[in-house]
Image 1 (tube, rainbow, N blue to C red):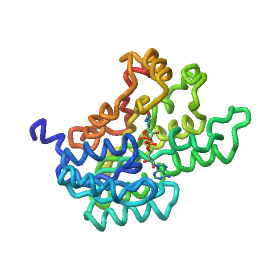
Image 2 (image 1 turned 30 degrees about the vertical axis):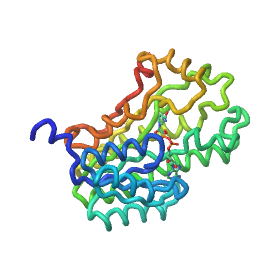
Image 3 (image 1 turned 180 degrees about the vertical axis):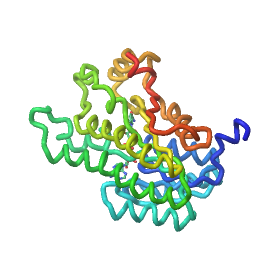
Image 4 (image 1 turned 90 degrees about the vertical axis):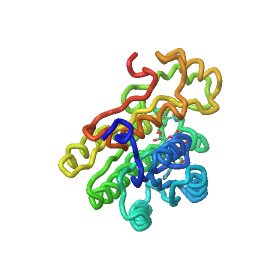
Length: 269
Ligand SMILES: NC(=O)c1ccc[n+]([C@@H]2O[C@H](COP(=O)([O-])OP(=O)(O)OC[C@H]3O[C@@H](n4cnc5c(N)ncnc54)[C@H](O)[C@@H]3O)[C@@H](O)[C@H]2O)c1
């Protein structure tokens, strides 16, 4: 197989949760451009059906949009049933959906001081970011087994690995929050557990560790983040897609149980 063919995703069916978010939409576009049939899964309010229709129009590849709340077991079961029904197989699972700061800002309590942190908010974050990842891994893994194996990528964050530098959030309307770090750290453990559990079944499981992606942040925050980063800038959406294409492709056939950092060197400091 030549080098280009190893990165080719033609005909691979890949399910992307949170598929119409900032990064999810970039993953769907790149995966379809590399030949994949993409299932865009997202909350109904994120309009995954419309996103899939537009993706298919732009790339000429079949794409399916499905509403799914990853925190709801029945939704996740239905997601993979429908993906199998439509395409007959699943080759890749991008376990990407998460309750991120952007969404949670609407519930101001997510940034409460830790000493008064509401239990309900902690549990709500873990429900999506860790239990949701578990449900997608369980149901997605079954679909991969039925298809003879494949690739699963669970998404963490630098904050699942190192503590935030709280100083860069001083004076900002947003901050890092504890359930995010705790749930993302859990993603690394689940990945390693699944990689060794499914190693002999042809399912590779890896963790993607993105650094902070610029998204209309306060310029002062962007400046502070850039100063703290060896590559001297925040990430762009397109910085993440090469790693995702690689991990979903046969080029990564011997890669499992690992953490793939795309963070501009943030965790090297
Ligand atoms: N953007 C960053 O700076 C950054 C950095 C590190 C890690 N990440 C991780 O990358 C992933 C994607 O983040 P993003 O920046 O695209 O965020 P985003 O908020 O733009 O996208 C998240 C997507 O997940 C969806 N979602 C939220 N709750 C859901 C649920 N219960 N069920 C199904 N879908 C749900 C949202 O509708 C949205 O489309 C997340 O796992 C995030 O933690 C992002």
